[in-house]
Length: 422
Image 1 (cartoon, rainbow, N blue to C red):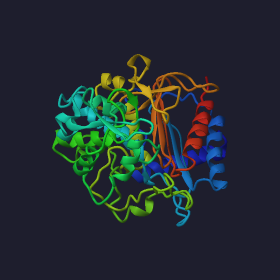
Image 2 (image 1 turned 180 degrees about the vertical axis):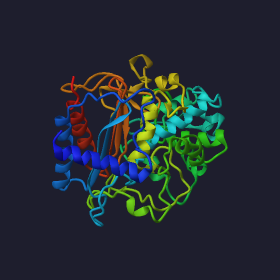
Image 3 (image 1 turned 120 degrees about the horizontal axis):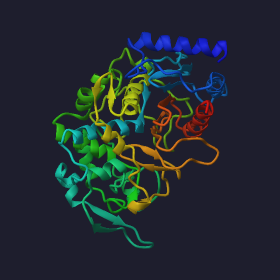
Image 4 (image 1 turned 45 degrees about the horizontal axis):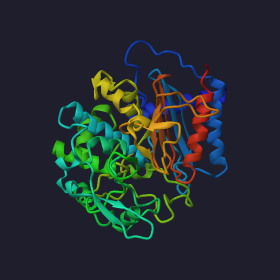
């Protein structure tokens, strides 16, 4: 590593420690730190890439952490958190996590499974009775949408692996998706119970267990956590995950006015998730705690969560999930043997299956060295993370850039793996 890169990384880690009171990266669970298998010179190219993205006006700034063997290999902040204020990007910058909320909610649900209070084969209607009366929308060319009864109930497993038939209304043009878009699901200040009641009035896009279809499954799962635990989703996550893990900056909105200047913003022309849906304002409190897309947080907080996953469900001597539960979550649950079809949008990509809350690498794409068993997810505003058990590492990148997220994720991940000495 050049002197420039080495000093920058050291300074960034010092800042991270000072801000949070502890390094956001988790300490190794046993024994001394093992030296990393990364090339310092090649890691320098990772930082150069992000600096170029900023210099060319594509993103305001970013924060990147690569951690291996329980220790930071590379940590750096880049650019500014907001081009309007010119406040620098810092280790305690708060990001909209969007769908990086889904792994957190999935872990929370699996904690209830480990507790014996929830079963993967439980029907959703056991906890939300309105789901017993759902119908499936069947679309035929030139005919009105027909409604058919369920062949079998939606289960908790379906919610975790996105095979419930629940969908989103902001992409695609099927008849059921259009009904979702027209249903005004997000109007007013509904709580999780009311939001799920609105969902239950809509038809499913397909029969449960037949198609991977990305949608509101994890939002419904969040409501089930509330029903089973007797707490709000945030209260349960705070008591069982956030507080014990030290994730003190993770919440569903930024209520503290003193923290609000720390919220990262995208470029002014890059504020739309879809042509009609803008990036949300995380500083406006709402009753809806979206288990699928509502969390905000810092890279330090998410690093604690990722290290717990990599450790097989433990961190700093405390167990959150059984090791066999982590193993189950990170298996492919929609492989060819299941007969589950992948929809036309299938975001994990051809080389990945899907587990219980994560995309799971099942083959190595051409011209990459991405390992089998790596699991990951991202957020529509630009954040992403991946956990790589083979190399005992994870990486988290925090950016707010809806329009550039797919390209940057691919290019940055390629550079990270090129920096591994093999």
